[in-house]
Image 1 (cartoon, one colour):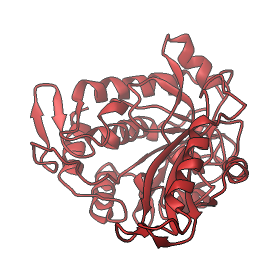
Image 2 (cartoon, rainbow, N blue to C red):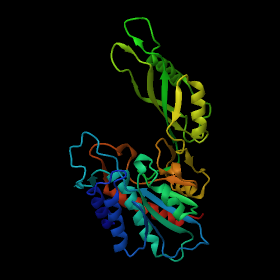
Image 3 (cartoon, rainbow, N blue to C red):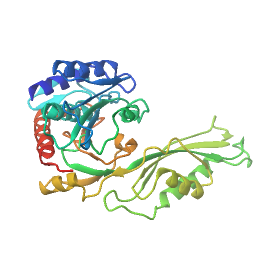
Image 4 (cartoon, one colour):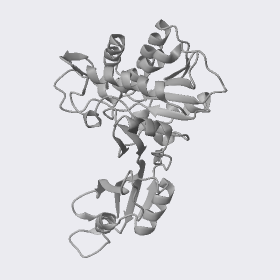
Length: 348
């Protein structure tokens, strides 16, 4: 187990911002080389199949990401120094998603030589997850398909997220007519935007998910005007929408477009809600062990995967993207044990 803690410390000390993951990818590849495991690469992505891969068996993907966000303001510790304080390991990316990443890797290595597995395993360490980029898992999937099921490594306290909300970002533009602020002239685009924002505050999507709850709408940015004495003729505001499984992002965007006077422009509709049924064998196995099953409000690479997935990993979601991010080393050790136990017992 200690070599995986050491690997995580190496990753923490290797800056790996989204689109800048080259060095972290090399760290992962060197580890696989030292383990005698063959692998494939594309850009900053790395993947490997178990030694006795068979096309006759179903395939499970174990995936997590190597990129991190930039350090949050308020760091008191060096974000790139893997500092240990008792059971705690501090450093940028330690929790999101270094802990899940090395835990899934340890699980893959554990099963790598097994010649009687009832399924195949493919481990994928991928890039650009934090920005929902197109040069990460999205370019790996065509190389490793078909996949029957995947465990996505994110910090969930080793509880099982059987579903996660989709992400839809809307750029909205309210249009008016410029004029002098001292005179009663022009049409104030800012006021028009405020009317639309009130509509969004009052609006509720009809369909509520048993697992993910309501569709959540949040206005997160607004900008208008050039100077204090000019009535703004355009106001731009941004809407963050977290969809449940009852609405494709394209459908939700259409509903909100019809609701608002402003022009509504989706940035992307590709990050839809995803998940599996509670009756899936993996969900049933987890449930039998008394582990909590829930729907996740956050979005991960699950959103771009066209097959059945769950999200599960050591670490706590609330620690992600925070100053002085950390994970407990015991969480990683216990996470590895639980991953292995679940795959030993899983029947697809």
